[in-house]
Image 1 (cartoon, one colour):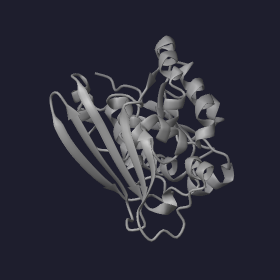
Image 2: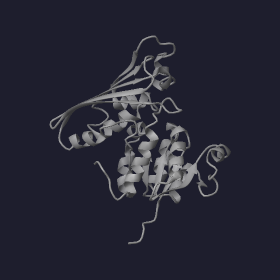
Image 3: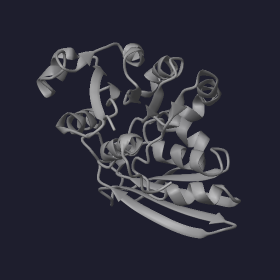
Image 4: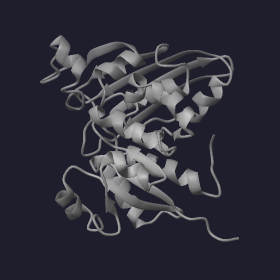
Length: 271
């Protein structure tokens, strides 16, 4: 049987996560090819990845879908929608890392169905999605998530700025948010992508309860989730090592590669 052509991947953004994803794809993942990138500073991208501008094309973020099968979004939240629409309207597979933005742009899900596109959210810095999705096939009664981050990882969040909450110089843990995942995604657009993804896998952003703590005593991003369902009850905790961007864990880039690999692999483990 002839080999299938490689899935062409386009990366929108080469920040801490995008650059690591690019390097792993360049190193080689069977069935996947990094075809193009969209970057603000082409010369900086070339210094980090000499293949940029040669074997790897440079495109505008909204043009990646023209010749890529998968568009992976690794951009600031403000740029999310136009990149998403460009991929969805061409019927591509769109993989957002700014998952919190999906809660503010949930019309994109219906748009994807209309255009024959798919939106694939990687697990990122969270474990247990298989269990949550399986439980959602029955009845989930409650989902509670508590996130603890080093204060630097939360500094500058719109929610904190609007309310005049400072996390600088904390000597003890401070609960800075208590509400729904949707409200949390709005107030902490770069901090709670895991909560947004959890809510989409389970009972939705308006029923998923979220607490966010700025904790000077931790050096990792710690997420604890409790799920009560008719079929199961479980608690899970993950302590994610921050990447060069303190708002993002080191597990995010490998999670993207794992999700991409599952699209082309002969064997996929997990639902």
